[in-house]
Image (cartoon, rainbow over all chains, first blue to last red; front, side, top):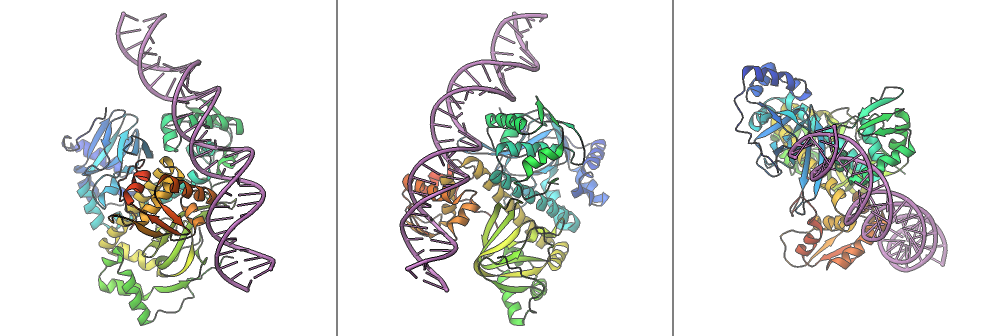
Length: 254
Length: 254
DNA sequence: CGAGGTGTTGAAAGTGCTCAAATGGCGTGG
DNA sequence: CCACGCCATTTGAGCACTTTCAACACCTCG
């Protein structure tokens, strides 16, 4: 059921593709600090991949040869227990880097990565990435900035699990999809499966469904399928955030 | 009840103290990579502090001027919500660095730090630390290694909250205090308050107490006060780890 | 001895999970 | 076009676990 991509069987990058890679990567603060020459060199060795839904990008504990950057679609990062349970570490989308922590320590991926919506991503050779970290202080500084930001994100995640109930966690999830400054009603589309959102928030699908109902009772929110209407950000914010040590808007991660 | 230390009122480091700082820091892989000269320069600007129980080292959102390194005692890292609830991020001891994520992003501490047992720590000027990261690739590489390791630690923490019940989390906590290779019985002393352990594991003190009782029923473990006798690591391991995606021994963090 | 802190225990309420079943949408094959 | 089956989602009922509130034991310290 899992399809493995061999990262080494990709075609050589065409010039046109390399240009595309450069353009995509330079949108990320991490690569934006690189001199054009370094970026071009890295891009030449990188590849663009398209992936179908459910495609596995790598598996936990596999030897890591490449790091990845999402262009489109959604990627689930997760670990599996011997019993077959799955712990979702994160679900990330366009503009996010993953697999990069393998550069340090044991050069094995610490989690599995799987596409949950069809999309595309760029793969970058680990060695080139590592080389940049050793030669460019700006690059490594930026890398540390990204890592530090992610750490805060994780701290917050853990805090939420401890202090918030399920309805509040769901509300917080929706809140992050809203435009914080926008007054008045806004319409949000849930970015992926409710089942997957549940897993990401650390709850069962049934609990998620009930949590959504409760949110509907407790706040003026309206939900139809995957469309959520938030009549007023402030009300929702008051409902979710009063148990949290962070102040809204608390945008995190890269 | 909170006592604030002003990091700037410390005395100038004596030569003898500087030697001590060098010796302590060089025990950490992060500082071990530094050339003797760089380390000496950093140590000169660093200070040793002794702290009593409950002393506050810094508060969340405070401007960060120094990073810290524990020599002895235990330090609680936590955040507080407007409602007065406390989320314990971690409880760390000798050999651990903290406050260092403030170097990146906004130069504010992302959490509060408080001594929970009397002890001592070294404070290092943020600027000197930052300078090293920009000038020494080895140092910044090591820094990233530490950060990456911590990230895995956090991933595991989150997984535990999702998949393990309280008794198993407690068992896992005890297991980490054991010598993994040692056959036969071993005696462990709980390193700090049960109340604090409960908070670190994300549960109420009562739940911790009951979890301990249940652990006593389900495994051949014996507990008297803060002394735990583990007759056999394997039994405990089987009890706690079968729901976890990591394989014991799963030592983490620095 | 009394006060305060730490840890334990009991009872009741709340929360989330499990298992089971129903609902509804959607694509496929007839 | 419709019937069917599959899958995601919802709903229900019962259960297990955790929290809450309250009471109490124990220890230490003044």
